Amino acid sequence: MRANEFIVESDERAIAQAQYMQGECAVLAITIHKMDPQRFPLGFVYEFFDSMPDIYIEPDEFDELDPARQQDIQNNHQNWSLTHAYVYDVKTQKYIDARGSHDSPPNIGHHFNATRHNKFPAKIQDLVNVSSYMEWDEAQEKWIVLRGWDALDKAYTPEDQQRAREYAIKYLGVRDSSGKSIENENFADGRNPQDKGDSKRHGVPTKASVSTLRKVAKQGGRKGQLAHWMANMKAGRAKAKRNK
Figure 1: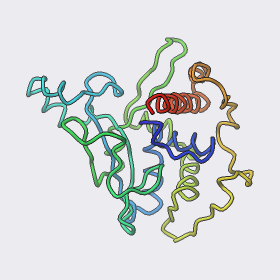
Figure 2: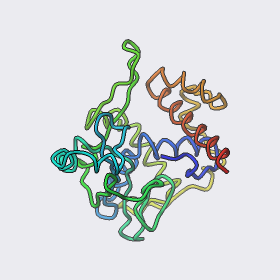
Figure 3: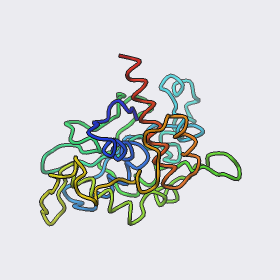
Figure 4: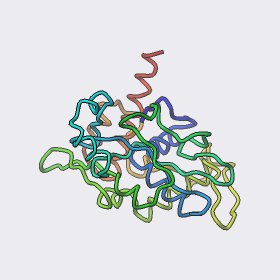
């Protein structure tokens, strides 16, 4: 994930988009897929890792591994980590993620290589197998990594599914199998009270510094998630400005 790739229309839009470009990309993809499975088959990008899901194996590092270890990593999804999930719109022949429609599979700033791959079409279980979730353990004062359904269940509650569905309809122009039309005229400017985002509901200090948001993230739960995503987004924006 690279925050400077986000399309920023408002703070609320930025938070929601960061959410679905990072920690909950699988939630958005599965939700859209279930709206019309025949029209929106699943796909995802994954990378190999050797210890923690967020510590990827670089191509040159992979080349230095024993051939038997290379084969084990390639064939065992336990050594795969989800980078980004998306759907393909059979009707428009476009790939869809939280940013919108694309002509090719979204690979989030990197080319596919020896350790980065694209799986399409994919089943829901395939996506579950490569999903991970980091949860702050206050007692142990460390991040706990969950995998598979344990990870996805954290972010795929009925409330999360409904929120993802609303995002897909209002932002991405996705229609369900009934052909329901899109209603998004007032979404961007927040005139509809139902459009207020999670940050306000959970008391996330959206104007706070990155360091403050990192501290809030340690509180865990939904508030911690949002603070974590916003901190990453702000840090990414700052880095992008420095690199200009």
